Amino acid sequence: MELAAPLNWGRRYVMVRPDHFRVDYRINPFMDLDQQPDPALSRAQWDALVSAIELAGGAVEVVEQRSDAPDMVYAMNLGFVVERPEGPLVSSSAGHVVMSHMRYAERRMETSSAATWFAGRGFTTSHVGRAGVGAHLEAGDAFAWGDGLVVGYGPRTDELGLKALAAELGVRVRGLRITHPGMYHLDLAFCPLDDRRAIVCPAAFDEESAAALLALVPEPLVITEEEALTTFAANSIVVGRTVLMPGAPDRIRDQLEAWGFTVQLVDVSQFHLGGGSIRCLTNPIDVRLGRDVPMRPGGEVVLP
Picture (cartoon, rainbow, N blue to C red):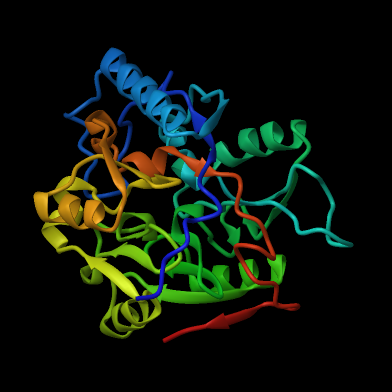
């Protein structure tokens, strides 16, 4: 059996402290204005997640939350962050961020504050669209995997966003059409574990995209629609060989442990009220072009 190599990325994260987290509107099926998160419990759960990441060997940097941006706590969607490769493409030792262009106006103010934060730490930034004009791209739809980026599109990111991201970074983008309203971002249905394995929920996609993703992952851990929506199991992160999960049915945990992972459950149920979990709360900033994402000058989009 071919041995799997751990992910090179997933040890450094940006997070947004939930100082102003609440449900002010409804832009996904989980949100209910009558079900408000408890501020003290939200902060305690967020702090516990930070501690779990650090205990697993990871590091966290914190962005302040805008008072008018209650969803900003879901830091994964601020932008897609990459470390530049060695050579002439290097424009900043800290890296580059393709800022998200949110589908919903309620979240668009988040990216301006995030861009300022990144720029202040030496990152370069770019935009594929702004203020509702141009391509929509939300970073929770994008993962480094295999020979490029795997990017979901449909509910939040649009097809034009795939082309813009591929051209901006000079990489191959494999697009997957998301059709399930409850798994509106790829990170609710797909979680890379190592270079051969990933958690996959086929119910999130149209038939062609589900087949393409299963073919792309040599050893998928397939979860059901119910498991994805009730446990947020795919919305997990991996730090080395530790999987930080919001919930895991016994069969999922048993399989992960059989593959040699340590499973650490972290309760972030307050954030489920806004439609996000552990992956949504954490944005990896150590994905490196040329190492984790092969370069392809000019970019390329591949659809099923």
